[in-house]
Image (cartoon, rainbow over all chains, first blue to last red; front, side):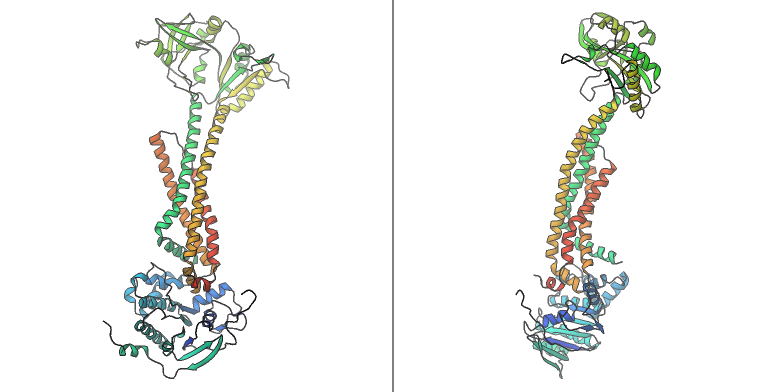
Length: 230
Length: 406
């Protein structure tokens, strides 16, 4: 408290290439949230630099950061963060409302496409309370896709879901990654990390391990292997 | 484009909380409606006073002697002998700003006809008097200048006198009456004028040639007053100045001598009464404004709660690329929309309330366009003023803290 400075991250340095699927793991207090905020342009590092899509954003002000978030980043949260009593379509359209270059027709078209990609084309007029947790997270994923971001950042995106549904969501992420979407997934569940090609493990603000995953689990296959619930 | 999107977002946010928005509006609605209704009542009573005074002859000018003090005792105006037929002659001849002019002497006494009697007043005037007071003779005719010159014992009587003397409904015209035992022949009956603004019965009067009243009833040769009417209402002020000048001349007053007469126009009376009713209006509007202020505070309260309640939503909007200015604008638009919608409903309600007051309570009302404009402007400003602080607070939120807010 007071004058004491806490270094949430120390000497962390890595690159993420286009088309990668990276999970960031670590226990609570390991600095993974701070890292996510910096990667997501929600926060600025006190020292060091961060570049996204070749643009160094360390010197950007709040408004410039907001524009970067709007155009280059797609966020997915643990608690979905959908607007209540608002249809799936309107929720997905939201990021584009803050981009004055997108026309109304274009906005609607792109939102519909995004909802189609997550398999919710038949649920566009449903409000969050009329959707299951998995469906709500799919809407959130569609929202993150709608601005065609450089990177999708997921913060414990499966944390509120049961195993089966979280595998379904992971399967969707793997599908998107197969379409060359760059995904950074923050989690503390090792089995989720098993679906990504690379895992960075943080401890006390430092990188403990940064390794490639040689045998990536396919969420779709694991779903098939699961006993069918009735 | 951007502002249009923000408008869309704000509209959506309001529509998600319709009942709350409506309740918030209620303060503004009541405030605006009461300001409009109060102003309409104030304005209406002012106009009705003006209309009543006008019916007495709005460009009427009265010249009366100034009541002097003698040994500390203020004398009765009617005992002053300073106003004479000379003054009347001077005024009649020297000014072009007066269209009608009549001498006036007043007396009071008992009117008798047959077995009936009634206490009343007698006005000694000339035929111009009717034009000055905007009055008509409904039955029979007014006496003529010749009858004035001859000091004929003829009279024109008001409705109240007719009712009290001719109880069997006989035609008063041609009948004889006695005023303080002087016989007069009734040659005409005045149209009913009703009570004036001060509750005085204007129909309780007997009109007779001033010469007759001077000689037969009062036994005086001076005048109690001179009444005249300016050529138009606009010229009334100039006429008053002109009359004052002529009178000063006629009375040979030096430049710094105080006047021994008094010239008054209806305009002064109107402004005296208007200022009283202005005070009332200000009072009413002050009370109504307080409710408008409370309405504004209601908006601030709800917006403030709304910002707290929607902190996570604001965090999300910031995370997906909304700028601080976007959030500020959204909340400000919400506040302004609520207050303006409230304002429109308030105006409609205020107008309906005014209509009901006019139709059911029979109070005179008058809706002025400025009252609508003012109350509407005030409520728009209220929206901006009271919406600003919560909106500012929302826009200053840190996205990370806002997203984590429980």
